[in-house]
Length: 310
Image 1 (cartoon, rainbow, N blue to C red):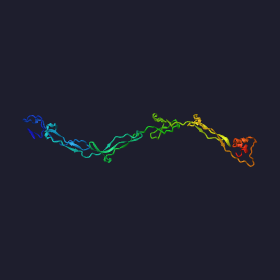
Image 2 (cartoon, rainbow, N blue to C red):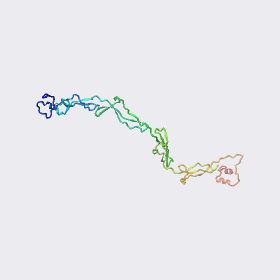
Image 3 (tube, helix red, strand yellow):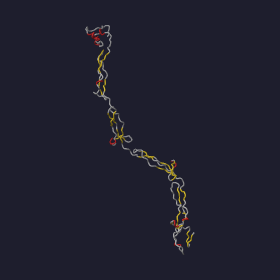
Image 4 (cartoon, rainbow, N blue to C red):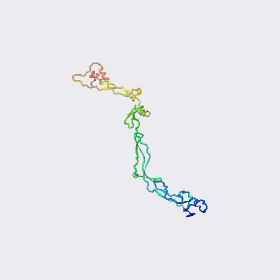
């Protein structure tokens, strides 16, 4: 303690350049401050969600009105230390982490979008842990919801391509293109779909080089002779791969349109009442035998005796 003419100054900081003491100068001196601990702590919490620290400040105050003054009015040797203590040491409560919505699965006609929802608890300024959903006591936010429920505009729908026609050489494929609703349940007039985006209905195609024209023959006709040698005919045509008449077939390989034929003669037995004889007593029956005309019914009948056995 220090007493100056009845003025009490407990734990006084040094006062710069005090006037010389004389008589009753106490009230003319500036009031000195005192150094002491605050009556209550002033908290300086680092974070409200995990363990923090409260620090105690020490200030220099005037004795008369308890106002704060600069520290150089108090004795620095008597300044108590600034204490600190831990605060909010209880575990942080879990809370929901909600991510941003992802892009909708469809642009129209109703899709779904999702987001991340996690139950986390902070265990430090930059550290956290993930808990089961049951760890968070509040209602769990939704992770999935509908989106883009507006109807889609009509669209072009193309059916399958037809086969390439003709079967060889350059040709075309065709298909049907319809203006349909997005769910394909309704068909609209073509004017309701954008013409500029309509798929093609015909494309060029080729199944390879076409074969050259060829000779095509018909079946052989009946033999001109009912008995013995004769002739039979057939059709021979030059046709393209499409079946049309052509003049490009080589004549060197043209099949014959006529050939010799032989019809088997019936050997009709001669009745006992009818004698086998040459009808005409002429000289040509030996020639019929010589030139082998006996196989023909007419000559065999006219020269029965001559042709008998031949």
